[in-house]
Length: 168
Image (cartoon, rainbow, N blue to C red; front, side, top):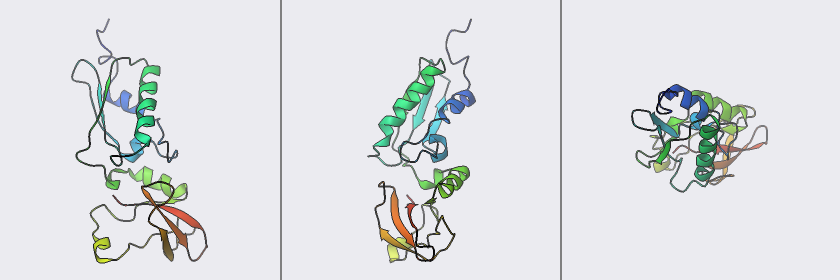
């Protein structure tokens, strides 16, 4: 009989359990899609799951940790540790390709450029494509949308408002 749940559960099995957890603010995305799971280490006496919040004050992180604990316990993993690290800071570059497609399908324009774009330093905004009609004839309405990580835009062609997931 195995002495610990590490011998029973592989990193992939733990990741499969965690990948079923949705982001509370954007439920179409899993926490795996967002790239906040930085690693799973099973080399010690218990699995250690390392996560990075999308930003240091993200109010969804408490709920995400509760959901992670609930999912792991329901799967029979009773001993584990969840560690939050802030460095390196999370970036929209960590959103998976599948996650970007899910955002657009949900009506949220995904980040258009990588987080290393410096256009905003020169007062130049990236063209944001409307997730409804694919037009780039859009305009910024507010730097802040329904959450701090999104800006609010409107399409000048189809006239629909939409959130844009900011590059971070």
